[in-house]
Image (cartoon, rainbow, N blue to C red; front, side, top):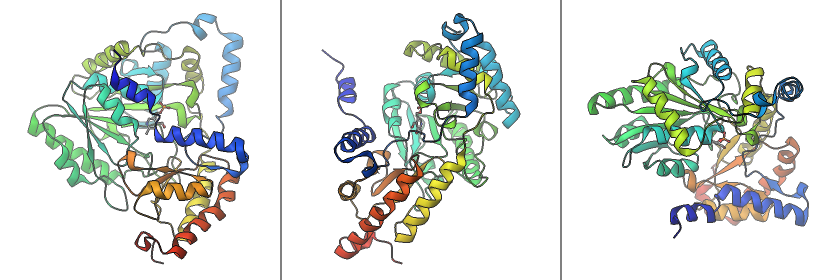
Amino acid sequence: MLNEKMYGLGSKRSIIREIFEYCKSRAKEIGADKVFDFSIGNPSVPAPKEINEAICELVRNESAVLLHGYTSAQGDLGVRQAIANEINERFGAGVNENSIYMTCGAAASLTISLKALLNPGDECVVFAPFFTEYRVFVENAGGTLVVSEPMAKTFQIDIKDLEDKITEKTRAIIVNSPNNPSGVVYSEETIKALCSVLEKKQREYGAPIYLIADEPYRELVFDGIKVPYLMNYYDNTIVCYSYSKALSLPGERIGYIAVSPKAQDSQRVYLAVCGAGRSLGYVCAPSLFQQVIKKTIGAKVDVNIYKENRDILYGALTEYGYECVSPDGAFYLFVKALEEDAYKFFEKAKSKEILVVPCDDFGVKGYVRIAYCVDKERIVNALPAFKALYEEYATLGSNQCALKTK
Ligand code: PLP
């Protein structure tokens, strides 16, 4: 007998992966330049040059043990110290090496954190729209996913709805800002309101509620927007960070968990993180990349490249008449489908070789996600097809109500 739940997960790819695979095979049929693939969040901006330089230098000068050997289960001490220093310099959060656990990216950071915090039957609240894998991660940790609905149009957190969703079983809340798939950055005002609800509910139920900050997109923000550092707003915070998007290194699988030193029983939480990492087999994140991160602290990708893509796409689509959520960060545009059923809209877009992701699985119906982490050329070349698609809906008059009145 197999574990049927695992079989189910393995035999059905996520919708993003399905569309991505389709794009690859379609590109073979008609040529890659004719397929407007906006499906997957694979960074298009190159990693900073410091990364390759650091790899070369390390490989040339360091011992095989440092490069390829096991580190401590929670990560190399010097690496954790360097990361803790950086967090303290940037945010004054007062973390130290015993607050940091090195991981294979945000997915591992989240699965470990959830495993550390949840007991069977506990609830974890997420905010729609949310990264589809949260459901898998929460359920794998024995928890139940509870979805809090967003504010209409702005897609900020609806504080009233959150308050209604928290129960005595709520043990964790996941906040992802900048958000995948909306590109929204939660404002400081929203964060303060969220934290005061959590404080109130902790007091009411007499038990901690942990705030998990899922932060792979923290560095990808435009126009000087600031992303509040949640440890500075709420004590029971665990940050799940990743270099996948921040440094364009998704294939290297490197990130970390930072437990706030101000969390209730902070060291016990940290040891539960260590235990969860152990039980999941997520010990010793890749050694070479731990060292690369230490050597390149402060390196940045050029976010202006994403900003230019965003400006072109957002500007053109809103001019044609599409309703788009204004994105301050990440590399996604969240667009209202031109008919109620986002899957039907997806099919019509597909017939024009535009591949976007219907967002029902992200917890919001009637929207699609456009991942604009692609070459600018692809965006520019796709614009006539987006325009034709809009005009087709307008001409057909089908579901006119879904079209924005100009
Ligand atoms: N969280 C969010 C919101 C994401 O969008 C992603 C990846 O796209 C992840 C977590 C997983 O990131 P990683 O590749 O670092 O595991």
